Amino acid sequence: MSNLSRKQREIAERHNRFLTIGRSLLEEAGFQHLSMDRVAELAEYSKGTIYQHFNCKEELLGQLCVHSTQRLQALTQRAFEHSGPYRERVLAFVIAHDVYRTDRVEDMRLMRYFLTDPVLEKLSPKTLERYRSLQRDMINSLKRLVDDAIEAGDLPAPRSTSADIVVAVWSLIHGAEALRSRALPPAELGACRTGVAVVEMVERLLDGLKWVSPTANNTVSHESTTQRVERLKNALFTHKLPAAQ
Amino acid sequence: MSNLSRKQREIAERHNRFLTIGRSLLEEAGFQHLSMDRVAELAEYSKGTIYQHFNCKEELLGQLCVHSTQRLQALTQRAFEHSGPYRERVLAFVIAHDVYRTDRVEDMRLMRYFLTDPVLEKLSPKTLERYRSLQRDMINSLKRLVDDAIEAGDLPAPRSTSADIVVAVWSLIHGAEALRSRALPPAELGACRTGVAVVEMVERLLDGLKWVSPTANNTVSHESTTQRVERLKNALFTHKLPAAQ
DNA sequence: TCATTTTTAGACAATTCGTCAAATAATGGC
DNA sequence: GCCATTATTTGACGAATTGTCTAAAAATGA
Image 1 (cartoon, rainbow over the protein chains, first blue to last red):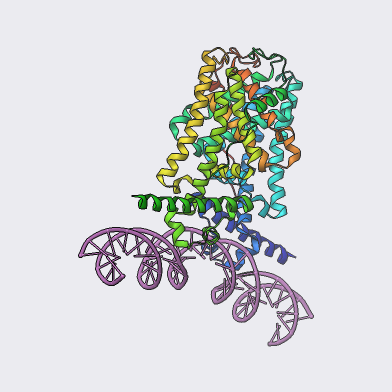
Image 2 (image 1 turned 90 degrees about the vertical axis):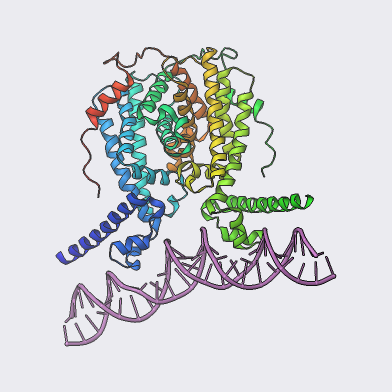
């Protein structure tokens, strides 16, 4: 009995050993250059052994990603537990991401990888579920917060659903992160380099939610967004571009 | 002389042949599963030949990505040439992305790959510059548009720089795209599935820009965003999380 | 102590990238 | 039209990597 538990402990320890070494390889060369051979070699186990713990490379990366996501989630939790006004908690959620990003660059890169690549399909159901569940938690907590804020009158949003608001806040955070990290040379980015700019834009978005009748649109005043989108689509994007290449 | 141009034409044709086949492999299996061996084989050329045109796999993908980006840019161009109110042109910019995404799923995936992965470094200087230049064009056009809109009083934004606004709009578009395509199970996404939601949120953001004094913050009324961020950071995120793993 | 079960090792096949020297084709002078 | 020079194409090759599978080693238990 103590035998069984010792065995289990050994397995768990080895598992962690692989993960720790994987993490350090990640840190020093990026997830692109992490190889199972190298992890096994550094862990002083053979190839066959590592594949007993992780059925593919993505599974190992995925478990590392889950760890990272857990840490991020723990940080965002502080935002939700903040005792200040509802609106401040939303901002704190944004700030949590910025703090995390500043602190753990390579983690963020890995998480972005799992955000964008068709790689989730390779994960074991268990890991996939752990990952999804963490993401859901963060999204749902934010959604609850937004609902509460609206309820309390701290965030009047007569024209928008809380789901849309959550998506928007999430997009501002992660879109800016993607832009910041690669897409453009620094010159064009300007102020976006600082996390404050993102908070600033979230503030403006939240401010904008409270508007009831749009006044900026002088020509067509009682058009819904759907109608507007339809009209512009028809006016500008009906005829296709010439075939590529 | 006609000889030289014939030769050049042949080279260009072969180049295109590789690209076209690359594109079709992309379409059917995603960029992850495109291999140079296979492209060469389908093009009925040997391995060595393809490497005379593209010095690495990323270069081929990069050139495909440039093509895609060109098409997207051509679409966004229509938004800038729209004769409606400035604000509508901003919305049309967003809609252009949605139209493109709907039309060309795999293109979008490839472009997201180049947006998020540390892969730009492998491109040839020429391709990198072509890519950057297209991105710059779109960003700068949008920035000019925002500047004009502010100038014309169509988009009052007393508290924000146009650069920040551009980053925010860009983030809303691409963040939502990332979210939509992978990050979460459909259930949580809700309305975000439709492109209209993004336009909606951009509208709210633009509305929010015109606010001069924040009224939603009841406790500390004359605090700048920078101060606010500092305060929240100190209050919530000073002590670190316990070490991972 | 020995048979049975579990675990580990590392050889193996398959894929892929990118290179290189040799074969082939094109070019141009005579 | 022929041959020397130049350019191009080929496909074999090396290296890295993933994931599998069998035989050896170790642990377990009677």
